[in-house]
Length: 338
Image (cartoon, rainbow, N blue to C red; front, side, top):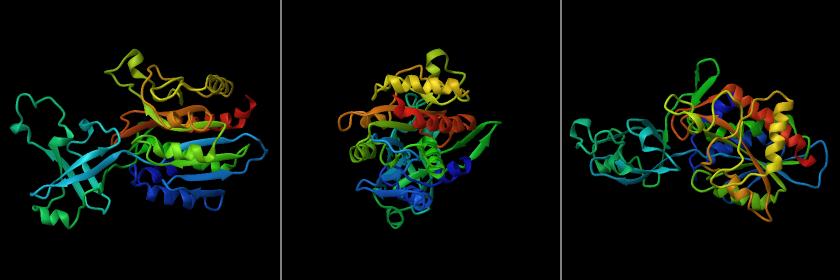
């Protein structure tokens, strides 16, 4: 799956601009299952399982990543921008970025020697930053950039240490890669795989997909914040790399189904898969809209722990990534036993 993950991460696709990611996914599944796209851009794939069932299982991951978007062009040819999704401004200043048309730029702002005492030691806000693409006038910039154009972080897919990899967009191309592997290998029961849009700006694609599929059970595949760095201790670490996939009991959007939560940990223990939960109730994902759709859906989230989430340098463990696939496969094979 690592080669698949690399291909997926290096495709640019912010919320509302997922077309290239969607095209790649369709190219991978078009000869392996039934699929369709909907008006919001979701890919809804159906895999006929080995055994028939009257229940519906939906496994879902989002295609979009966080990014930036052009909002105003200045007289000097730089332009203002806003974030697409939750991007900490601390990870933006000084970064190389790439526009959708292939042009490169740099995020800049006031020089350090011009900062006021109050500004020193603080991350610049988005209103204080601009993107510089190397032109010197508004007219030159307007020939290359339009308001509403998407801007992406540039990032290489890099091995780190013995077990880790780094890239942008691991959230949530990791979940997409797991689903592609499951489609390749086939499923025990009939399964809907939904590759959804616009998670980072309000869980929008998943809401549409859930109402379309109307599942009885849902497994949401995600990446979630790991804070296992020296400055964090105890519960503030939330989850940790190399300790297995994360199965949450609750976050800011979802109270997860307790039977599925218990089943996931039982299956992990029985099969020698390390597994952990989050030590803080925080964040949220597409489960927030899936579990309340239609008449209600029994929902669980399985996440890859990820350092530096929503940045150009997301870091995950290869073993956690593989074990997320293993646990998802086991759970999908047993989910109808409840």
